[in-house]
Length: 305
Image (cartoon, rainbow, N blue to C red; front, side, top):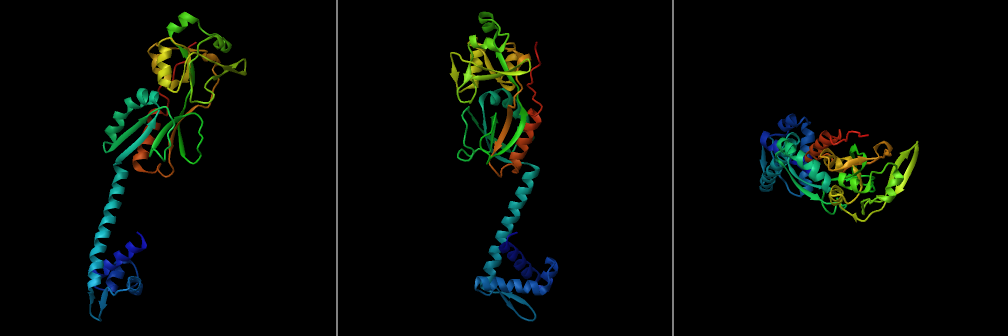
């Protein structure tokens, strides 16, 4: 408790017990310590709260007001502490979450019903967009982000490392042929993201040496979802994290390319939070759920030679 609420608690105990000595026993203090605390309280307020006689204590009119208001305040403190303690056992509240569209639609949406069944008192608002948001200005509790981190003032938690996959549709490969070496990509139509630095530079490992290919194509967009759809329709080759292309590959809408030559890269999926929010019960259980559901990378693509 704060100093003021502690004084209120002791003052209330003195009145309920009828003496300094009895209140001191309950509060595990000496009678003189209780007496001095009440005296300091009266001096600070500039009024007498209790009239003292050798046989009894009597409240002054100011003391009656102070006792009534103190009881209201102490009850409110107890209610807040009980609510917080209860929230740890049964988290509740509203979460504002930012997620990029492909992950939100293909992975997060199917998983959310399980979370809501566990924590029915938690509600969500999702900002599903490819643009980077300002967590503070946009009042975001949790953001999902892929790739390198820029803002060191935020709290980051790695969920899993992603694998980059080069792929194209059977239709595109039938019309344009299959690249065998990374350099073959120079004659292909490659679809790239406009808002990701270095998205046109694709790295590979050939005979132990790192090879980088600067690709180009007819379409650049800030939406992975749009480029994925274009690749499925045969417009070109894409290179995305396995979490983005896994469903299309499983459904034979896209085929992985150059898998034996893919350069391993540090391409993690992160949760990003404003400082101080990671210990909030509603945030903590959602972070744990994301790690539980996606930490093992359930979308991992089986290697195809």
